Image (cartoon, rainbow, N blue to C red):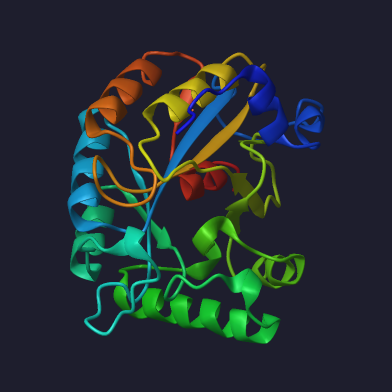
Length: 261
């Protein structure tokens, strides 16, 4: 796998709107933090999620964990070989949430909504939110970030989903604008299927050279779990390094948006 990642690659993944973000007046509450980093962990593998939470807690941080509503059920059909590891259930998700971590929806059953009829895709989202309403303590869709499976969405689904949840995460630019009132669409990149340590590290290094922005990188499991895993040791080292940079805030996605409410 070619993991070489250059500044030109970063600029390319930012998208056309990145230049404009430097001219919008941000509403982020912490004016001293010019760079926000969100590592958005998908799929909810049990071992990885527990370890991820422990590593974030080591630095007094909250992890951003996004889970499939029905993946813990015995009749769940694995969407591909990258979901073959044991996942957590809502007992674990409630426990991690109580410990201060962010637990957010990552689809009902990990279907690609962009490949479905729009009305069917909407129904799938509503089924997902219904499970979270029933199973996750204190869940409120209006305070939630919905994380698309495969980072795949359509303009029609996005427009509708913006009326159902606080915000949603999909594929697109690596760097978002600093949070502002009314922000609904969050974009990210991911990398895989092999280990992402170098790609993630190179991406963050280039991001830190920018004047400001909100970096959202879609990660999955740790070590040997999932598509594009990050090494637990590298994650530990990365959080240690970033937590010592005064202008960097390491936050889960919903928490970032809640700072501007």
